[in-house]
Image (spheres, rainbow, N blue to C red):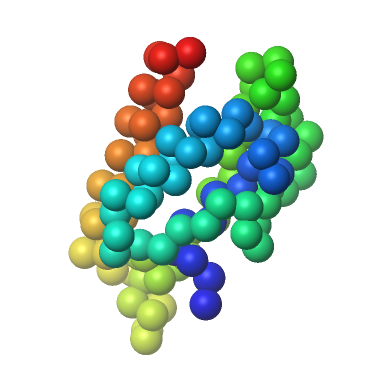
Length: 103
């Protein structure tokens, strides 16, 4: 079973570690969701190719488990699940925005 949020930074090469930590810290404050950093999904071509933190270009991949927005039994869209995960995304984007402003 995949974690709910799979964050990839090409093992820390495509984004500043403090950005990844800001995202992970945000996810840790939502204990109903599991998360992993650089687990099975470490970042695809775009993440690896364009992420150049030494040039202030940060790339983070996020793979989201369909269990966070679908009814797993029927694979039908779940408005309730989607609304719940949207609040987590809002928190992630807020954390990224704060991280950017602090740099």
